[in-house]
Structures are given as structure tokens and as C-alpha cells.
Image (cartoon, rainbow, N blue to C red; front, side, top):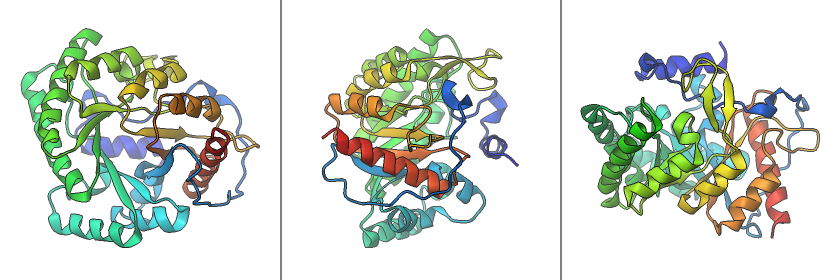
Length: 330
């Protein structure tokens, strides 16, 4: 069964499919170009001190292995460190959905990270309701659902939880609702020293001006953005946010430039690579120059979602590209 079907089934089990949503990121306009079908493994290096950023690994890069039960969330820290030479990790709540309040489980996960010298950075949270729901009761329920992840993030030593600004309605209606939901969750998270950060994840949230206006309107300094180099589809062929083919995209370079003043993390999305090891969908030199110009010096997380290369090879290819470009920008 294909990746999209696997993810849709999983999200349906979380109760999202009932409203016709999917979090499958769009493969943007360049995805029709042919990538080099190589299995060569780029050299793993750990020397990143000369770059303006540090490299982390988003757990979604290994979603196929996780869904296939070839590894578990508990294995993720060792996988990142031992297989890829990466010591900063970004969890996805889908892979330990029932463990948010399990202190025994979280304690073991935290100990493994400590033993390995791995830093837990954030938890990407999906399937907990719409923070931009126009119905106040449903929106407040979504806020409450996310609170356990705030507590789990603090326990693990993370700085943030990544959330979504989803809602059904006009841009203005969802903006007002999302501002309220994000503000309320951020107020709760502030007492735990945790940031609430929104990723551009399709629809309204992929419009740079819309999302930055929402974040600014919360007036919470712990509410920010996780800019993703992809995920800039704002309109689909069937009129929905998530169903059909993407027919309108926001300029990704403009979007990231707009997002960076609010960034508390960055997500380096990749799908396919050419024969020179460059990402086909995104000009990493251009994108990393935008990130550097903002003054950002934190982690940039690898989020490989391609199919031409295996997950390990895709992660290594993305890491090699980030290091090559990052060193050239010193």
C-alpha cells in the first residue's frame, strides 16, 4: 500500500478523515522533473561547527520504517545518532500517541537521549483537533488536547511543540479562531517554558502573510512558526484544502522570508535530488541564504519525504546537501 494511503488510514484512525483532511505535504511544481535514481550513500560527517546552523532530524523522515514496525519511537534517538551522526531530534506524536502522560515511558526515552548525548528539540503534534475551529467548544477541546504534549515536551527537555492552525471557513474567520486557540495554548505553555510553533501545512497556513498576521495577533512571545521549505500549497483542484491536486502555490522563498522573524525552528523538506546532489524542489543555496540573513542560528531539521531514495539514503543526501551549502555560506 502506498505512503499516502498509509498516512490517510492513520489519520482516519485519529479522527481527521471525517472532515476530509490529510497532512500529506504537497509535492510542489518541480516534482515532475526526473531525479537521478542513485543508491550511492553520501558520506556521513558530524563537523558542523563552521556552519551558521546545526542539523537535527525530524522523525517523519523515518515514517515508513515506523509504520512498518521496523523501528519504534524509542529507537529514534539511537537511529539519529548512530546511523546519521545527528544529535538533535524532533519527535512526531503519532509514533507515541498513547504515551504523552506515561512518565515511565518518557523517562526511559529521556534516559536514552542522555546516554547518547542527543538533544530532544520539539514534538510535532497532529490529530488533536483544530486550533482554528470556528466552534469555540471544539477549539477549546483542541487546546486541552494539546496540553499533555506541552507537559511531555517539558519533561523531555524540548523547547517547543509544533501545532497546526487548521480551521474551516474564510481566511478571516479562521484567522480569528486560530489566533484565539493559539493564544490560549501559548498561555498554558508559557508556564512550562515551552513554545507553541505553527508549521505551514497547507491551506491558509501556507499563505505567508496570513500566518504571520495570526502569530503576531496572539501577542505571545512563545508563539511562533516552524518554517518548512515545502508545504506551500494554498489551493487544490477540488476546492478543498487537502483533497485534490495542488493548483496554486505560495512562493516558498517569499514565505520562508516572511516566516523567519517568527521562527523558533526550521524544517528542511526534501523529496528528490539531481545527479549533483541538489534538491530538485528547492534551491537550498537560495533558501539557506534567506535563513542566514534573518540571523537564525538554531537547528534546521531534515524532513525527507521522497521515494526515489530509501529513507536512510534520503536523509544522508539531505544532510550532505545542507553541509555543503552551509559551509559555503560561512
